[in-house]
Image 1 (cartoon, chains in turn blue, cyan):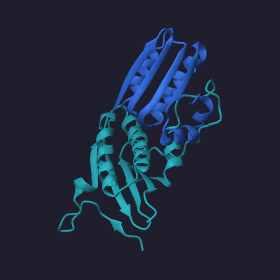
Image 2: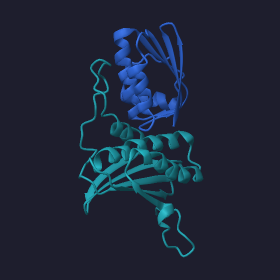
Image 3: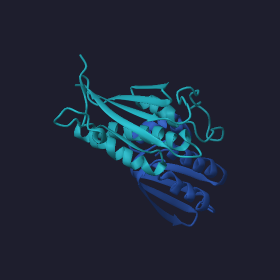
Length: 99
Length: 156
């Protein structure tokens, strides 16, 4: 289960994730990726309250990164140890901007 | 000598089927129930949260694969079994389905050095399980896909 909270200021959007980004919850974030990024040039994904992420979550994060490379910038913030390990194992640590 | 605990044996020492393993329809909707079932055992064993989450991810990947592909386009049952070994304390989780023969370990590992633009979306799930579990093995026997994962949860 995951809660998605979006905060938008002009062309900046922050998406805060709370819970688990997995097979069950990834479609919710995918819907934001497909429908909620028009006109967004600065995207921040806040993972402070995210427990973990499976490959279903990685797929959506990658789709968002690809989209934002075309229209602006994206950064991922407040990544916990287990998610950082997942980013490192999969090479996502090299393709994402993690702060 | 390794000692195998059969979690959920009753007083007559007969395996308590529902407590030691669960069989459910292999659907995405049932992933949380499988995770809850396995977590119950892990928490009782004093498993560190990080390892619980790594195992949760493995269940999401492996049970998710069964739900997506084993019986496609129909659905069918899958069994998840939990066993524990002592010294060092290690959890063994077995996923069994009788869908299409499919060895998830046969695919090549993804190239994790590609740029975001060059990356294909997908193919990372089993790779992630391979890297975070201590062992993963697959066999096809008696018309069943049988996938085992093993993870040490404590040093002693």
